[in-house]
Amino acid sequence: MFVAQVAETTFVPYPYEALFIALCLAARDRIWVFVVITALGSAAAGAIMYILGAQYADALAARVGAEDVLDEYMGRFSERGASFVFLGGITPAPSYIINIAAGASGYSFPVFFTSFTASRFLRFAILGGLLYVFGDDLVRLWNRMPKWSRRTGLIVLLAAVTYWFVSGLSG
Image 1 (cartoon, rainbow, N blue to C red):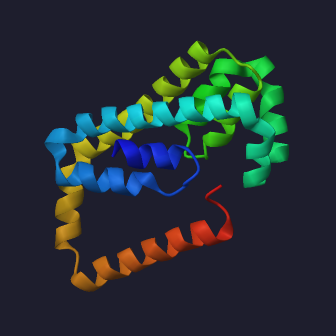
Image 2 (image 1 turned 180 degrees about the vertical axis):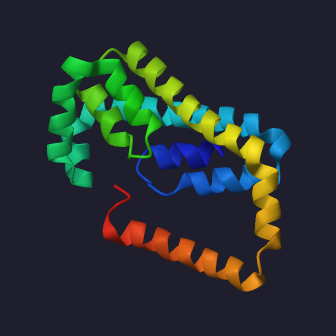
Image 3 (image 1 turned 30 degrees about the vertical axis):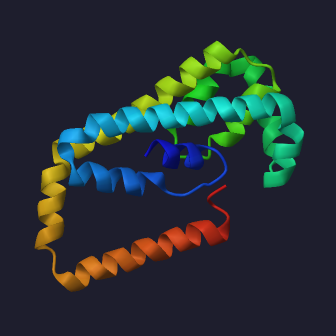
């Protein structure tokens, strides 16, 4: 899970939450372990992207086609700093651009790392908490559904993920 989260928080955008949710539903007694591992993986990847941003921001932004986005984010750091990093880390938006911009702008690494780590922990703690509280009900509901509706749901999910990648919504 740690490695998968590092990959997702860097340059391999995919819906990591699907893996997280599946593991949490399969092992509810380990949800908080999954939350911590996921937050640590995301924090490590955030630090990597910050360092890369400090060294290679322009080249990285050009590689992912986000030059304009990087310029916009760099301008915001002088105004909003930690709150911008925190909100960027808690939302499902690709955080690697924010992390690169933080490094490129010379934003304080300790403040960045603390804010980003807290936001990622909070994001996955909320999701883990919801799965802890409602997980059994979700599994029972899933198991009561007819086989054809479960298959249809999985097909729709796969189609949505495929569209997400093909359309460029993944970052």
